[in-house]
Image (cartoon, rainbow, N blue to C red; front, side, top):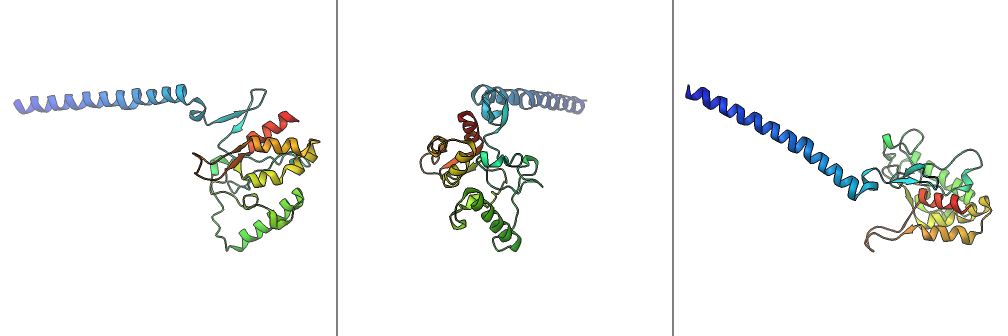
Length: 202
């Protein structure tokens, strides 16, 4: 009889503990984290969206995208790094690099083709094309390019939009982010934010 009571009591304790844990860890804690995220880090918690002047969400500051557009319009935009994510690139559901080593003939051929295309589009010698203009990032979704690649595109973009190079160069300078904490990483330019500023200036 005593053994049955002990078992019944232990079972009751286990059930109550399970219910309490479910309420605290499965409901209350997630809601608290969600609430703090929305209140203190709203943009970051929602994917760091970027909106146009009309209020329309046009992308995320953390995810790269293509600015090729229709034929003839790509010259009006600053271009992102190449992407190997998905069949057409910049696929957030297939984030990845090409997984090809530096000695792989397919990768070397692709880089040479990209270098020739970028050099022709921007009117610079192939030897001056920055590495990030022809190589994809590990994720394939890098939203940033180097200031060197952004500045290389100034002349093309300014000419295509009928703006002065000084105006476009100033936009690049305004959207160049310095090293994190002053010493981590390298300066970068967010392509989506730069293109939005460019559209506004035009």
